[in-house]
Amino acid sequence: QKEVEQNSGPLSVPEGAIASLNCTYSDRGSQSFFWYRQYSGKSPELIMFIYSNGDKEDGRFTAQLNKASQYVSLLIRDSQPSDSATYLCAVIGLTGGGNKLTFGTGTQLKVEL
Amino acid sequence: DTEVTQTPKHLVMGMTNKKSLKCEQHMGHRAMYWYKQKAKKPPELMFVYSYEKLSINESVPSRFSPECPNSSLLNLHLHALQPEDSALYLCASSQDPPLAGVNEQFFGPGTRLTVL
Image (cartoon, rainbow over all chains, first blue to last red):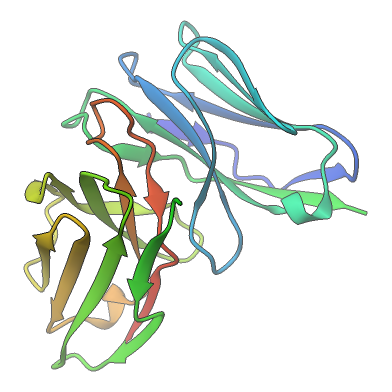
């Protein structure tokens, strides 16, 4: 089982819709959870982080964490074509030395006009 | 300011060359990282420096040699690389090391390395 799993996509949503990106992780002791956006040929950009169960909102973005289910998600409201990118879920856990960021393989999001 | 800078943006080198990648941050961050990213793959951790000391080496071949001259600078020295080492090399920093405190990592723009 991979440490951090994401559906590779592509996930296609119409402009203005809500995009829902999902991520599961295997290390039950994981402490910190991050969402990065990466445009083709560019470096990852941190867009959200969450440490506690529940929801965290920042503008059009909402991160949701459920530690019991080992599940973290990112909702993007009012999706725009500029949101089209690969979204990387990343987790800091306790296994494998613990003190490192482990990335999922990323979900490609396409927002269509 | 959450800026991490990297130079050069692009680098082409032969297998016998020696070159260095540079990374700089002025945010007072105490942890710095090197990652390697191949096309359509997530970043892979190579090295972690915490408080200017190497704390993690992810079994990286010795042809990659990291150096942290001071708290703001991180170098990656390259020697006798192979074509399969061609990738985007990313530097990142965080205020605190991963398991302590404020551990969000911010990435630089990367160096696109091509080994001929």
